[in-house]
Amino acid sequence: MTLRRMFAVVILLLADTPNGNTSAAQAGDFGFRFEVEHCLTEQLDTFSGIFTKNLGGWPARTVTAPIALTDAQMSEVYRTIENIGFFDYPSAFVGVRKDAKVITETRPSDTYRFEVRNAGVVHTVSWRDSAKPTTVEADRLRDLFSMIRGFIYEHPEFKRLPAPIGGCE
Image (cartoon, rainbow, N blue to C red):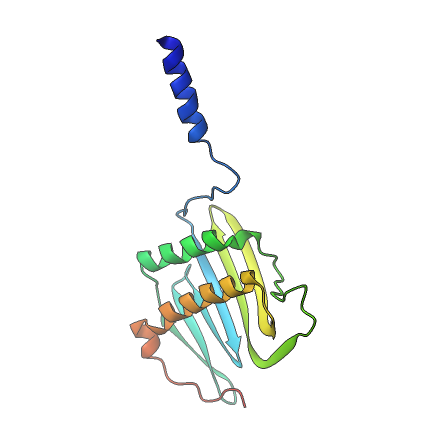
């Protein structure tokens, strides 16, 4: 009987052992700085809870607003970061398929900078999303950024901000 119990405990421990794909849980220090530029720059800093928007014009005018994502939104961003393997992305991300024979450049394009901190680990990815055909990793990153932009643009404080004065021509 004792040998059977010991065997059962060993089986349970082996079944519960983390493998290489197990990710860290969302830590108390989780947060990010998200910046996107499409002629004019917007930035959300979840550490300070401040959103900054360049309105353009001459001289350029910038406004800020207090924008904090909900716990549910932050959890969704975290889960997506983990699901796409964000911490494995190179800091200077290109996102173009290596087998592409023809690369198409689009201008103007979105340029992103995304800095994430979780459990004391900080990782930053910068990417100019201008070339096609893109990789699956690029599509996943673009989807993550679209989700974050959606959270920002639906926030009541964002909707109170003035419209940009200038933009791309």
